[in-house]
Length: 266
Image (cartoon, rainbow, N blue to C red):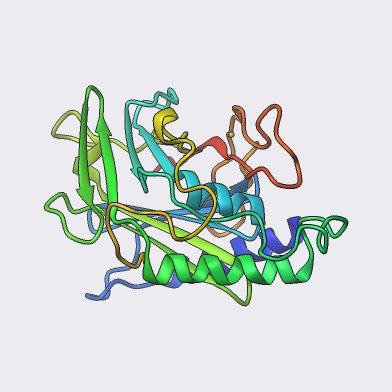
């Protein structure tokens, strides 16, 4: 698995380092690495910060989709959770239990080929046809919900899924002005945190058994030590905080939560 993640990092880095914007302006900087089964790439482009997260891990994919992902931005490098974007903000209904007779699959375990293929099909259908569009921007004491496809904040967020490769990609684009308190922005100490959003306790039991659960909107979205690489700048400082299996869960069935920070100095 580690070798596969490294290959993803290298391929994504190569693409990003060579990427050009529509008006032929080269992306100015690239931060890349991996932590807790997630490969990340951060770039600057025309006053925006672009954060891209990818994973091949089944339980991590389920956690990101079911509970949403929160990306934190701390310009002072203190790992404070004062500024963040969470998407989606409502628990998404996706079944972790395959269809079929319970006796027939009693001894098969969760990771049978049929179950994995069924899960892949569900994920692809969810992301391409019926995925929520509402996200939340937290800026210190204020919270503002917005639509990821249409808003006046300049923020965009999408999920995409390669069913054949079982590769989930999440990309967040946010203007630098949205994460700063003062007129001048300094990214030299920027730390970025990634966390699986914790579901609302009042809604924790809702929509957890299948893809037919009601959603508020429709639309397609289409902490471990970080490791850097040559040619760009890696996030070399990470701090794992509660990432991975939650206490009391079944390691074969519980989603793999993520919770890490990395340096994104630009």
